[in-house]
Length: 240
View 1: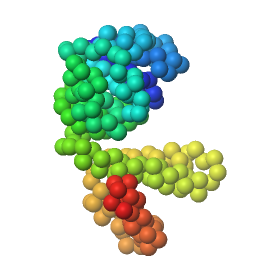
View 2 (view 1 turned 90 degrees about the vertical axis):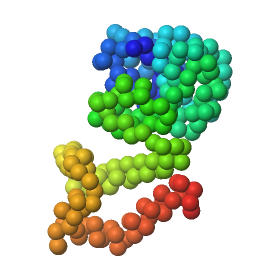
View 3 (view 1 turned 135 degrees about the vertical axis):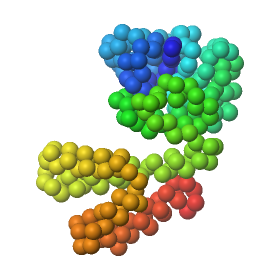
């Protein structure tokens, strides 16, 4: 398939890295020259072009733009009726994207994560997710959302990643200074454990009376971690 990327930020780069080994003809924009050149240098099927050149070369166009810059960038481009457009812009409704890329068809909002470069990553998607599933499944898992309100809720909830990473980092520091092995162990432990099954039965299994896991969790609950997390999510969602 002929794929184009308008905007070549870190997430777009990760998406290109995930797709390039599948043999697609990929054209990336010059908006980040160094990153675009690096991708073209590593993959024979990736080329660099100006914004209109990206559109002209592509069947599916991915928009890796800042929402506040989208109107300026897209306003001067000529899209075709046979093209499909997928937006990475969580801050712009797909209906607004559709107006900017007409007569092309804006099909979906897609929110990838850096792990998509290697596969095994979650993808949030809103709209007609067929093209997303065709390109990224089964190497990645697409979580199709019902509407903009559910997308906003997921965007708030996914922010738990940052404090979770910080907790692992703090525990690694507690193990002692530049302990690369300690951090690697904790990342492996938490990542593999979360992928192994649902949270409720896992917590039950970790609730051995007087065990390390139970005692640390109870300490943190007593310190208000649950209330702080729910309060933070409510604030992100505009409920507080």
